[in-house]
Image 1 (cartoon, rainbow, N blue to C red):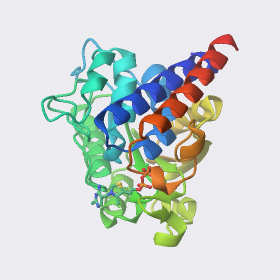
Image 2: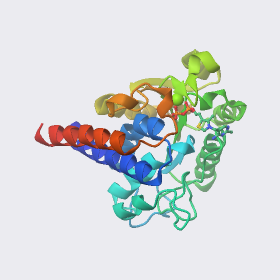
Image 3: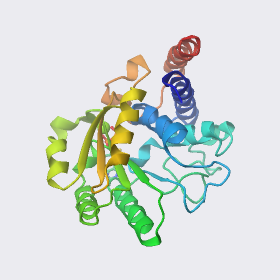
Length: 278
Ligand SMILES: Cc1ncc(C[n+]2csc(CCOP(=O)(O)OP(=O)(O)O)c2C)c(N)n1
Ligand SMILES: [Mg+2]
C-alpha cells in the first residue's frame, strides 16, 4: 500500500479518535495520535491478519502495551473491518463493550487486554515464546510508551526475550518525549534507549513514526533479523495532526471541549481532503 493510501487511512483514524474521545468526554488523545500512523501501517500493510477470522491461531499478534491509547487501536481495527465504525461512538460508555483500555474479551481484533503499564510487553514475550513452542510462524508486535519504559517490568520482559532469542518479536517504543505530566527527560530519563536495548541483547532499529517509508524500512529490518528480538525506537510527536495538541503534555488524558473539537475536526478534515487530492 502506498504512503498516500496509508495517510488517508490514518487521517480517518485520527478523526475517529478525536470524535470518540469528545463524545465520551474523556480519554487519551495525545498518545493515540502519536502511534496511529504506526498502527495503520501495521494493520493495513504489515501484519498477517484477517478481520473475518480474528482468532486464527496463525495470525500475527499485536499488544498495545500503552493501553491508554485504545482509541487509536480501536479506530484502526474499525477502519480495517473488525467491527463497525459506529461502535466508536460507544467508547467508554458504561452501557457498552468499548472500554477505555483494550478489552480482548469484548472487542474483536484485540489480542490482549492492557492498561497497566509494563504488563503488555510481558504478555507479548509470552505470545512470541508460544509461537516457538507450537511451531507457528506468526510474529508478535507491541507498542510501548517512552514513559512506560520507566516500569521495571518492561526490562524483565526485555531480558527474557533476549534469553529466548525471540526474533519473532518486534517491540516499538513511541518516543514522543512526554508522559502523563511532563517531559520524560524531566520525570525520569530513560535515555540512551539504543545502547540499553543493545546491552540487553536486542536488535535496535530507528524510525520516524510519522513517515510510512521509514516505518516500512524498519519493519523490514526487524523481519530480516533471525537471532535477536527487535525494537524500533520510533520518534513521534504527541498529539500529531491537531495543532494545539502537538507536543503538549496537557493533552495526555483530556477530552476537547466543543470549540476545541470543532477546530480539531476542521484541521483533520482539511488534511483528509489534502491527502485524498495529493
Ligand atoms: C502501572 C501504571 N502506572 C501508572 C499508570 C497511569 N498512566 C497512564 S498513561 C501514563 C503515562 C504514560 O506515558 P507514555 O508511556 O509516554 O505514554 P504516551 O506518551 O504514549 O501517551 C501513566 C503514568 C498506568 N496506566 N499503569
Ligand atoms: Mg510518551
